[in-house]
Length: 246
Ligand SMILES: [Zn+2]
Ligand SMILES: [Zn+2]
Image (tube, rainbow, N blue to C red; front, side, top):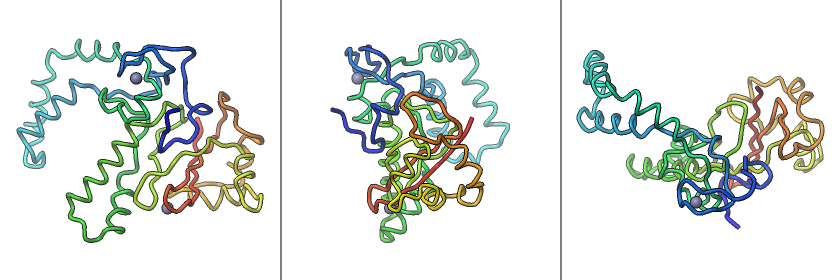
């Protein structure tokens, strides 16, 4: 059984296709995640961006006019190629390829890590690291998170929580029941309030959101809004909650 470092229970919460499909990475017929849930970075745009970086390593030194002209020339005539590229989006990724972080090979990802928070945490933990060493750790962990996260369908795009210098594991999508079960004292609402992540702590009307969360457990396929996502720090065990709605 494939193991996913940052996603505890894909069998229950991920978008999985019925039967066996051909994986767009290893081309074997296997049980697969739904490729439609992924964002796929355009190879054409990536190549243009890489060329820009090679030729003009410091974009601040380029005049806006020059920059626009550079992209205009490179993009001229590419419109059809980009449309074709979008049409040929991958359809399926098998469990094994995703678990190995191979989504990176095809530029696909379903989440974005909170890179800034992670960078600060790693710096704090290892004050003697050089900027490059620090950045390498940030990139390595971000690549692992984004390249190995099973397809799931949050309502909004939010940044994946980081804690103690690594990304957290998504342990469950949650209604009230999941919080009640997880709370040591059985008070799920208190756990919901205390575990709210980052800005959500200040910006959440706890009574209102809690009362609208699904009263029982969140089933694997039901759409419910608002929806909570419970994360656990893989190092200290802290519980962090993100919620969103449609
Ligand atoms: Zn595969
Ligand atoms: Zn932690």
